[in-house]
Length: 78
Image (cartoon, rainbow, N blue to C red; front, side, top):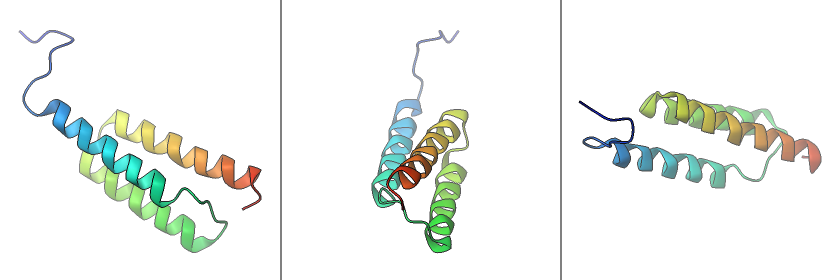
């Protein structure tokens, strides 16, 4: 029986890949721009990452990063 804190198979490796992809996504789009091209590129990249991982944690992390882009864009006048 699998306990709540056990890691099986490649669970942690897959999560690490997801974290790296999301971190690279954040770095790539860190400088928020108020252009349709910027937002289209952000959306496409987020959809690509989510399609590769499809779990709630991935969704939540991507959402938090995109909200940060939006917040900083408004604050910095992008």
